[in-house]
Length: 299
Image (cartoon, rainbow, N blue to C red; front, side, top):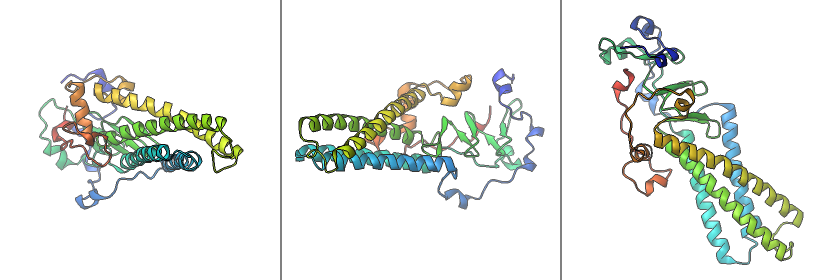
């Protein structure tokens, strides 16, 4: 097998004598594999907490500043139900994206027994990550924050305190979509509320004082506009990445495509599940992605 420039770019050992399986600690037992996935990163935890606080702040302003004081009961019920449903789905998606294993390769699996089980043929190559002592599947990359190799890693997102990879990309896409929707909904309601307050008496359009009401609405408007732009861009790039079947890291590094090309619809179903249904929009439905192919380690 010829070594392409792409292979030379990946700083991984290429011959069996350099794999040094005797220096690798065996992977953890099966009993420890069922533990909850959570990244203990201070910055990521802080960003995740801030995310939840911002959603709760938006809910506070929407309910107590705009909807509860409104004289239109139907308007308040419809918009309150819609906003809180979207906010709940956004936080549920964030929770799943944060606590789902993104596709971590078993740490320390570069053992002699595992390498022998691959039954390598002459000319075939396996890649070992020198940082986590794992045999890397094709399209896997090492994350310095998670300290693991992640299958189809797109990027590490501090806002969900996790990598976005093969197993949790659906939840990240849903998170960005629902945050964008509640941001747009909040902006529309703030606009209508300002018009209502200008036409009516400011002391009657809110249970708070006029200066407090203006400050709370302006802060919500700034927050909603900022996150509408940010999450809309992220949602668009993620959908494009899924449709083209090329992760953010692969696009950044301009890696050569070595995997079979599929249709956009097949790529979407691979991330969101088979077949197409309302479950695509649910953060509680786990997509059926099948078991990892043991031969994906071999090139």
